[in-house]
Image 1 (tube, rainbow, N blue to C red):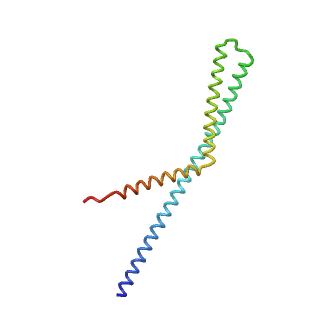
Image 2 (image 1 turned 135 degrees about the vertical axis):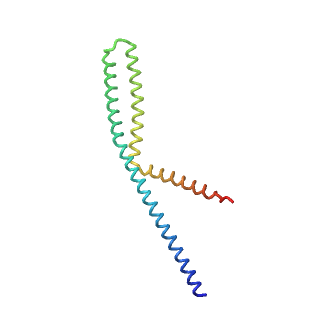
Image 3 (image 1 turned 90 degrees about the vertical axis):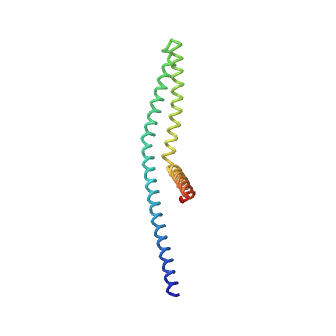
Length: 144
């Protein structure tokens, strides 16, 4: 009887140690995956920096072009009213493009300064997908 209890206790200890080892292994894999995702996001955010700088350069060029058109219009070098209207329409379009570019540049800056928002969103999406898979697996019944 004592030998049976001893064997049962050893089996329980063995099973517990196996489960602990499995949990440690899965935790280690999870941490390594999170680190790799974090590194990929950092690289993705670093890719945005040249785009942000390019957007800044384009905004500078648009401002210079807008200034040139405004100078042309103000110096009265254009006597044709249709040409003046065309310049005015072009200025409006330049202002609209500049506004869109500024919005895009602000988004790039926000993403570059707060990559943790992207990481949190990726983690949440991954958790949602994993929970959906577990629930789908849970509903699975063996065929008879």
